[in-house]
Image (tube, rainbow, N blue to C red; front, side, top):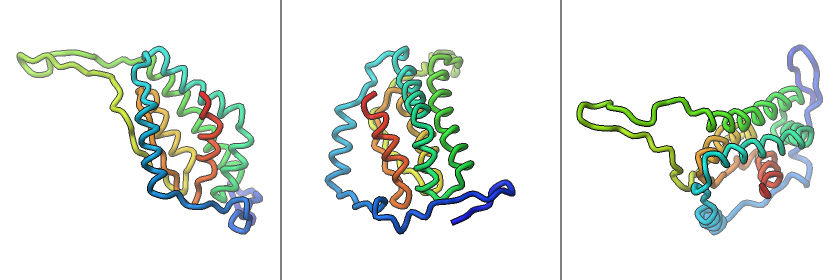
Length: 178
């Protein structure tokens, strides 16, 4: 398949005919297992000084595997390589941004917003967050959702689209040891 992008022709892989890309569906019990694992893995006790290092490590791991993720994203979604490159670049940038943003909190944490009452903003994890990503931006949407969730000290159960799960699954495999 050939696609046009910015007045250039780019080869796009047709993955629907490849047996390597056929996947079996998950069962309900897998979702329960994922939720239990996420609850056990809640890392909110970690300091705000440690959590940005995790997001930065994820970005570094993605950058180290940039070509792999670009090729898989193009094959997974049918996007031209230049668009897949831009998506992977943006996903890496999202993790780097969240790593920096967590260290540079600038909003007031306390104040008298209502007469006679002291209001506090508590920056603490909520726990397990469920996320569903769409077919058209599988890796980028996962990054947009995961980076702030993990930076805040939460864990996540991520359900990628059935149509384009490959990049998300590879991403999770790449960062699972961090």
